[in-house]
Length: 148
Image 1: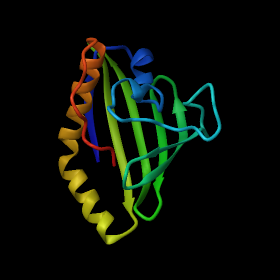
Image 2: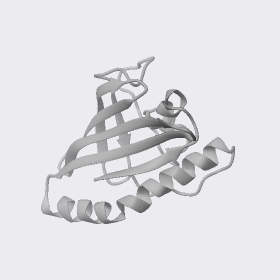
Image 3: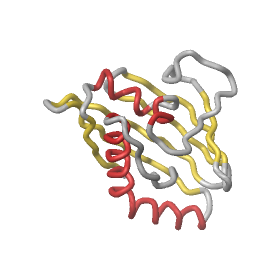
Image 4: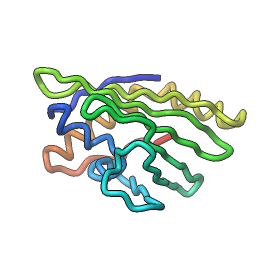
């Protein structure tokens, strides 16, 4: 599933917003943990973990073409696995950002949850655009939908 949002920054500046550390600036509750400290959280092969009360996800930077794209592999053991790819293109107003989730459910329950996530995906990405705009304006954004 793919959806597009607009960010009023050029790709060189907007890119950071879609990195493990950069998302801390605008995603409520986003707290990546790096098992091995790294100065560049976009270097291919970099690993970090995220957790909620229900699950833990391992993320890996699969590829990076700064400032055009970054792709992450992610595995939530026993639940889902796949990739998240962020592609940035310059526009007159900043950047058009396309976020593509390509996920495989690992159980029937996970398949149902991914179906619900897919149905809500356009509004999920709209919430990212709103949260980023609030962050850039110096405001405090509302609660984002949980990341799947």
